[in-house]
Image (cartoon, rainbow, N blue to C red; front, side, top):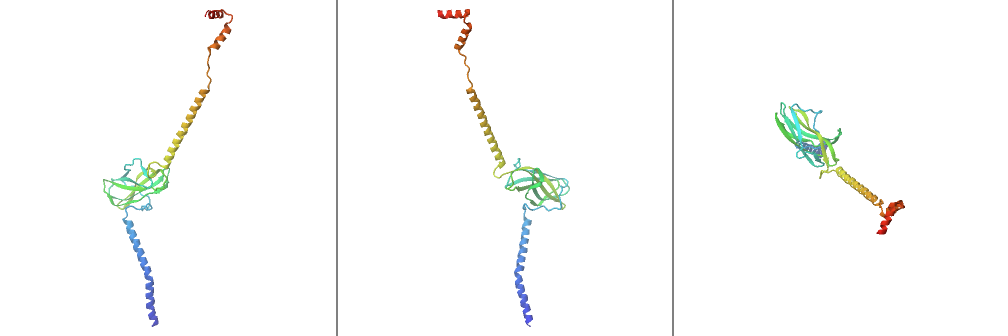
Length: 255
């Protein structure tokens, strides 16, 4: 009888001790599910999100893309600020396509194997493009504010599906100019401008010194004066005893 009494008590104690763990497990599972629902509803995901694919994607036949930087012909990208571009897509294929995402990467201009930054992946939902239709998709990206200003190569991709098969087009592969936020002049530009002004100032000082030296040399050069008195005395010595000397003496006496 004692054993029968203690067995229900032990089972009850075990259930009471395990109940907090079951509640924590349920709470964690509910939080994970809520977080998954939030991620699915996002239209723009983080920079670390990768476009899922089993390998490199190729463009579909009849699909053409282009890129426009609105009101930014110089393709100037301020670091740390949003930059918008427009991706144009024309579907001349045989089936309707669904745009999945747009993403881009930043590379060093002399070596595309070296990544400067993986930029934002922007997802699209229910973005279908029927046959013989053109569509435009906005894409906004932000270059890191810690990125050194200079020229970089931007490579942009647009991922889409046709009959549940993924494809990808490169809509832009060219150079952009990353500058510091708040102005179009970078630190390197300011340094070069300051260096140029300093060199011009030194050249001006050197030219002024050369002019001063030339003026001093002209002042120190001796002036040659021809006196009439010395010339007359020398002439008298040469003409002494000649008829011309006698005539000049007679003339002086008459005067």
